Length: 410
Image 1 (tube, helix red, strand yellow):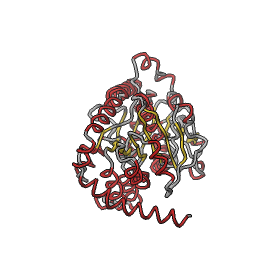
Image 2 (cartoon, rainbow, N blue to C red; image 1 turned 90 degrees about the vertical axis):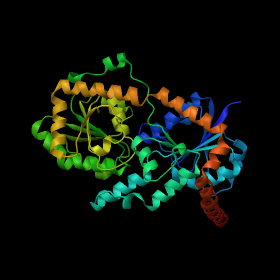
Image 3 (cartoon, rainbow, N blue to C red; image 1 turned 90 degrees about the horizontal axis):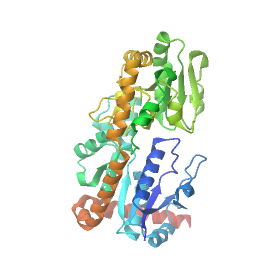
Image 4 (tube, rainbow, N blue to C red; image 1 turned 120 degrees about the vertical axis):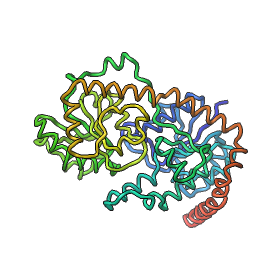
């Protein structure tokens, strides 16, 4: 009989709109390769870009917040593994899973560290240096408690893995480094990638739901693009991203070569038309899906140190990392005009995908880790005393709050 995985989603994934959506699709494909039957449950509403689970052979079940109907649902399903999509979902449903399906392995997919992203955002708007005061927030307490309550947390960035171990003291056995899992790019695909002379213009990409992406576009418009256009008056910058808002559309100025293009279905095909990708992100966390897409498309990048965080390991980057606006614009012009520089960084990108994001390596690592934990689950939980203590205390509060809300609603 097929093993069962229940994914409890914060939202319905949109793989063509966001890196989080494509990450979820990669996890689904990995578990299907392991022979799991997958049920995806969420309290969220679907959008026109939400993934069609039927085409993937994934069961799709709507669930309610603060409702004991979930208890009956999971008792009947009895999954071997439950994957929480972000810590907020674990807060809402973790105690119900622990109570009604206690032997299910509980995995948290952090996506990125929310406390890190939100702390950096607050520091950015405060125009202050990011310190531990911003990191050790109420949000951090909630997020760390959630990590402790789960049997395993998937951490997308090596930087965040080290932060969790060193700054927060999270035991290594509760964490698994699992970055984006990409199919290796073979030599033929590398050769067939459009060359320097077949490409033109600059590009930037990112869903406008995320504040760092908007701030990045604003910075390009107000500062960097003017510097690039002084050197390259015919060049254009094309801006792609889902969830377009009016404040983004107002930045559209064709006469300045600054074009808001909006949503695009196939980002890889689109990026292959461009010579340089710009990513001057001022804050954020996790890994940047836009840089992964650029490397897969053979498009070199100029990026901020924030954008590059955790992306390249010890390998040379697929472009320049610059935080100074003048240097950033100069490096962008250099890649755009010098084919040798362009080719070197394009090749770096292919090597990074193949060596640091190999789908087959990380799929096997995930499966081996799950099998290993399932064999010693009782001992693993006993060793994680802080986790069981938090499960006991925190979950009592979530549980009775939830039951009170349910009674009130009825």
